[in-house]
Length: 129
Image (cartoon, rainbow, N blue to C red):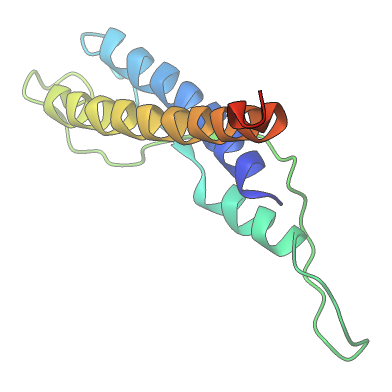
């Protein structure tokens, strides 16, 4: 999988992660609500395996598809928050939201930089005009 495709997939992940975090924050006062999280590591590992090339029939072939969607999982932690009604910790969620925002901005800038460079190469960067 190309690095730009991986960045695009990461943008999709950060967007979905933001939605999950927002849902957790919105339900901070909901009794017995279980916080949710988004699993991405397995998707990345599968994408890397899908890109593995077999050069010899004796090599181990990895399965996997790079087109899997992200999986929302329930947090099994039974430790209640300060209000004692569910396991959503607002400080943890706000920290996760901040980290996710930084990741989104980084990936967006990398993609933007890639396409600016590509545009400059196609246009000949103004040289010869």
